[in-house]
Length: 127
Image 1 (cartoon, rainbow, N blue to C red):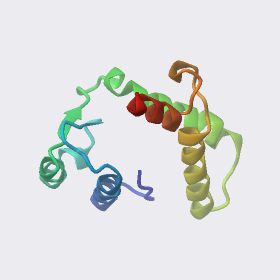
Image 2: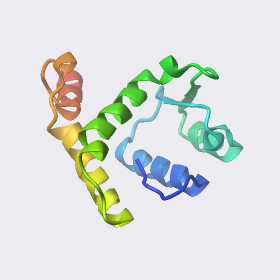
Image 3: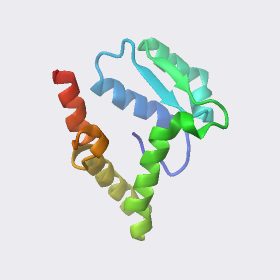
Image 4: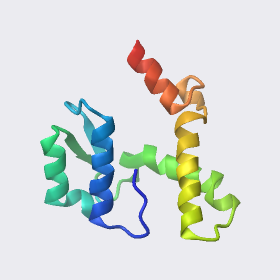
């Protein structure tokens, strides 16, 4: 992920570059998004094509296609945003980073066999 105070294309390209460093084998990967303007740009599509990544997009006006990320943002809002006030953008960014770490590494999910997302992925790829 990449945080920005406003949607700019550089935010998306930086996020992709970070993801490419972590994910060495991009063959047969599918990257899903909504129909945001940045995901429709030729430069974005070219970055995916260079790595052999298949682009997937939600259908127009169909939030169910993006249900997983919509669910994540709902949880983020209820567990972080609605519980406190932030004194600055920097404080908000810091809290978001901490929350994403917590969500991925420590927050167990019943539908992931009571494991965190990172634990579940590790378990899945080890078997």
